[in-house]
Amino acid sequence: MALINVASREIHCKIVYWGTGYCGKTTNLQYIHRQAPQNARGNLLSVATESERTLFFDFLPLDLGNVHGFRVRFHLYTVPGQVLYERTRIAVLNGVDGIVYVADSAQEKLEENYQSLVELETNVRQMGKDLATFPFVMQWNKRDLPDAVPVAVLDRYLNRRKASAFEASAVNGQGVFSTLRAICKGVMARL
Amino acid sequence: MEHLTQLVVSESELGNIARILGRLTMETGGSHVLLLDKSGQLVSAQGQTDQRDIIALGALLAGAFSSSRQVAEILGEKDFRHILQQGVHESIYTSLIGEQWLLVVVFDRQTHVGLVKVLARKSAEDLERVLERVRSGGAQIKDKVVNVHFRDSVANTIDKLFQD
Image (cartoon, rainbow over all chains, first blue to last red; front, top):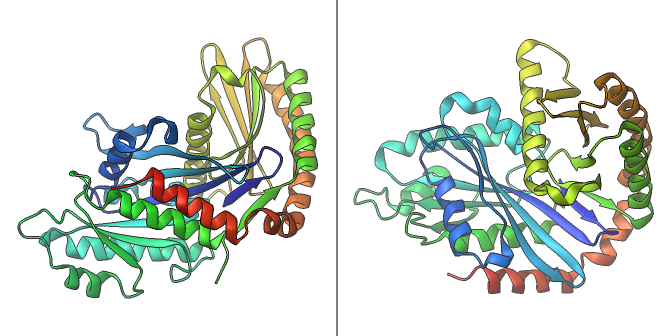
């Protein structure tokens, strides 16, 4: 839930990156952490396993600085993507203001992408919200794969709501910031 | 267009919150007391907060609390509304306020956890009343701050900071 603190003149919003295991959620945040201006971001916090799979969440605070006298902050989170962490994903989604759905463009991941999206829709509905009217952006990641599913197929299969969608190769940084700009603006538009 | 649910904390209410947290810090002898939104965002803090990464602490504590509520569901419990994390030197007591905020007390071995629980419960009652007023009073204040010009300025800042 967005927090507007008039006394301390701060606005805080929470954005969650959602998707299957290994789809590139953490890679998105790692790229943002590396490339964003130092004064616009904090430390990247990762609660992960020894093999660097996300166990709980990654957390990256962004600070836009002073805008009309208010400090605007976006807190970015990723969920753990592996199947066994379903309940943990619900916990991380708590209080979310905007969601980025990261799809893995690999052929063999199409069904998993779909199941992950269904799970997200269910969880958002249980929060009393509707993904159709919620700040929501899709990222078609791993476009650099030689056997990447065509975007038109991903769009038809996964994006029936016709949300804004961005092609990306997060490991190279492509599409990461355009996705971020879109979701941040989407959240602000609904505030 | 459906608007995001928001909480708008006014100056007067933040003053009330600061007083309640300050009193709790003093009475428990805690090193610091935090009030967090359940999403992990910091609403207010009192005590020796400059020595800690409060932003990361808020995110982690809210995540842990949120996770514990999922555990409660699996166990068939209605809810877990309090968590105690005990360390060697310091401990953390977290309690849920009105399904929205988390009251966090960080205290050392000099303070007995029973005292923290009793005092935190009293502060929680006061904070619930604040939360009720915050919930009901926010829309007008918000509209003064978040207008078209503000949104445009934020959008420009986003474009400037996060360029490809």
